[in-house]
Length: 306
Image 1: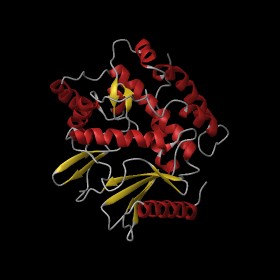
Image 2: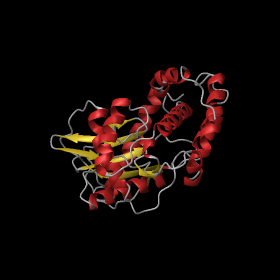
Image 3: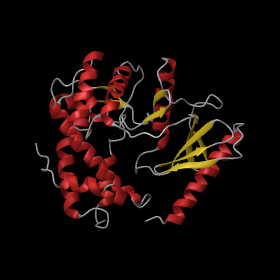
C-alpha cells in the first residue's frame, strides 16, 4: 500500500508536471495549487483561468489518453451546440499533454461553484436531457468503454489479496461476471440477452453526480467514459424515486422509459465494477474504507445467476 507521504509526493509531482506543461504552453501558473486528489490530481493553474486534470490512479490495462481524447471531443461537441458544459481551455490546444510521465488535459476554470447536496431526484431531468443530447453524438464511441478487459485483470490482481477482498467474495464476483459479461461484449450480444431494449451513447459515469453547479447554471462534465450502452448504465443504484423522475422527463423528451430488468443487471455490473476497484487500493488506500459499505450491501443480495 502506498503511504500517505508517498501519495502526497505523487500529488506534488503531478502538480509540478502540470505547471511545467502549462508554462511551456505559455500560461502563467506561478500560483498553482492542488484542489483535488483522488483518481486524478486537479490543479488550479492560477493566475491563469485554467485547471489541469492529471490522472494518477488508473486500472491496469487501461491508459488515460484514449479516454481523455473522448472527453475533450464530447465537451467540444456539447459546447458547439450551446449546451451547458465544462469546456477545454481556449488558451492551449485541446489535446492531452504528456509531461514527466503524466498525461493531462487543460480546462477552462469555472468560477462561482456553489456547494451541492447532489440531490439525485432533482437532477434526473438534467440526466434525461443529457441522454437526449448524447443520442445525437456523431462520433464513434466504444461499447461499455473501460469495461472490456478491466474486470478480468482486476480480479486476477485481487486473487490472494485477502486483505483487500476475501476469497469467497472474489469467487462470487467472478461467477456473476461470467454470467453478465457476455451482454456487454457488443450491441448484438446485449440484444440477445435483453431483446428489444435499445442502446445509445450515454455518459457512462454517474452523470447525476458529475454536474457542476454555479449560482446561475448547471454544467455537464466528466465525459471520459462516454460510450454506447443502455441508459440504465447511467442510472444504476439511484433509487425508485429517481427512476420515476427520470421516466417522467424521458417521456417528454421522446426517450424510452427505464427497463427494470436491464436496470437490475446494470446495477449488478456496477457492483462488480466497484469491487474490481479494490485492485487499485494499493495506489489509493482510501478505496478500502470507501467501498466497505457497498461490499456489505452486495454481500446481502442474492447471487446473480442465469
